[in-house]
Image 1 (cartoon, rainbow, N blue to C red):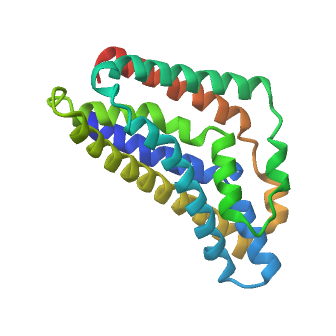
Image 2 (image 1 turned 45 degrees about the horizontal axis):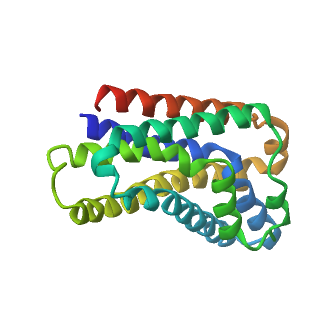
Image 3 (image 1 turned 30 degrees about the vertical axis):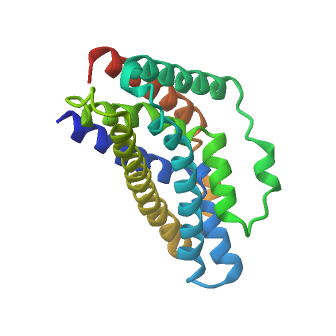
Length: 218
């Protein structure tokens, strides 16, 4: 049940990221409207998904390759949770969006998605969940060779990134499709709510959950 709960957390965090306009689906709508081609919408969503997947993998892989996970799992999970909480608090205090994102050309959606995910801590949000999955998967194999443990964790990192990105793209694609075909960008500019505070608080919550689960042995 603990493994299932953590994997559902990976998927639901993807749903949440997909709902958040800060992860890029408005850019997909804009690209399709500017090109006046329906085919431009899935193409743009694919580029955003690719960039997001690379960002998730870039964050998770270093943790999966840490030999110290064998002996310092709990401490590393607590430290990761503290880092996520610190980023959430920082985003609550500093509401400004990273300026360098505005300098990326609209045609480079994959690059923009990668940088946006990094800047907003989207990958870090997965770290406490990912480390919990690694711990549970190897709970009865803590004394196995470090090489075997790392190989398993690398595979898990890719699976977590893929599952998260797929769920994000699904939700973001649904929202973008509805906006593009029926509601239009005017609806988006007038009615969409700001998720900045919710995003920052969710980082704090995920970090706290990571620390609690590490201390509780989950």
